Length: 76
Image (cartoon, rainbow, N blue to C red):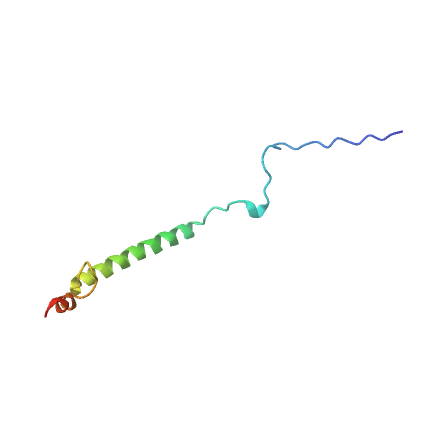
């Protein structure tokens, strides 16, 4: 009169690690990618504009101060 335990059947793909919903990597949205590219482009444009502005105003390229100030340092 012993009752046998029923064998539990395994499901398919038991070799694959189970992950919770919050462990899955969610793909980036298209607007995240677009926003990142816009920010990178804005930074590059800002750097170019600052470099061009410094050149037009007459800044010394190596030390980053106006040429008139650099010349006045060496005038005795």
